[in-house]
Length: 261
Image (cartoon, rainbow, N blue to C red; front, side, top):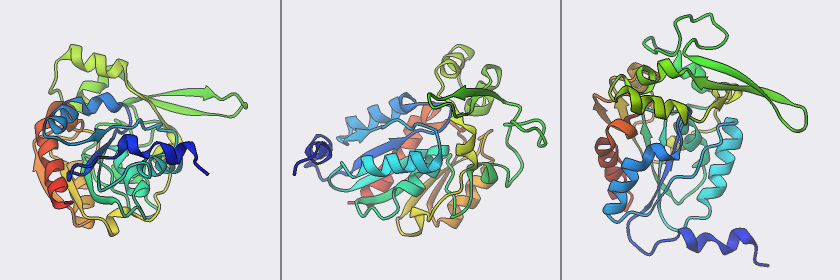
């Protein structure tokens, strides 16, 4: 029996020897944040996709991405930024087509760890001025209600904190304000969800440590990269390195892609 799912893989398939590059955004951004990277990779002949991340919960987000990856034929280089690193860590487990993982200023959790735990493991994050506050002070909590009556809390980055937190002051105020206005919030529970068995145990990984990251402390990134035995590059980049320094990000992805051949 032919199903819709089995009918669509050819849309994503490529006869090129280059792997397909899948880009996964994190919290407080969207797929458009990869535009500079996408332009560069496509100009080099790569097939690139950037499926949306719902940011509802690590299990749901990872399950969705895992299903999406099954529609792609051939080798895959899977790239995650920020919380997207947690998503790829879980979604790639058991998928033999994923030949390389690339972490861009990202979480690379071990089993049982959450993004919130890792963000607080080392000092240096600008996400809060008060470690005892129930919600980090750089964020706004916005309650929501679903159609079935259940609800939750979405976290938005405060507009006046966005430029420092994600861009380390690298872009002008106008651009930062536009990015803050179009950000996708993340559900509070997603940051506290524990990770499953990490794909980096069995899949080679590459890691960009952003030395001017104001959200995830660079020491935390270095710790995660070393633990995963990642091929590591350190750069003077902010948290949203894919926005400010797409060339550096593209170069690292290409390193992973060439190794994945």
